[in-house]
Image (cartoon, rainbow, N blue to C red; front, side, top):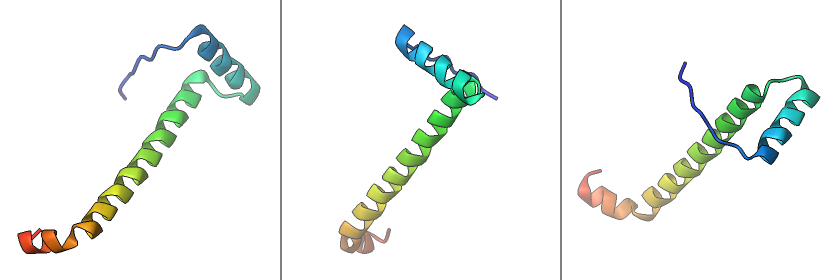
Length: 66
């Protein structure tokens, strides 16, 4: 397991602590969930862009043997 340190403003830290208290989860659990959600969305966005570009440039890619 790797560790990552993030800096939050006082307001963000307080909001995260309040959310954790309200949900019974730890601030760290919420942060990990947020990172995972972000990575999932970005992975899907990048894949969609790659697919769109591959379709757009399919004739060129075919000529190049890719």
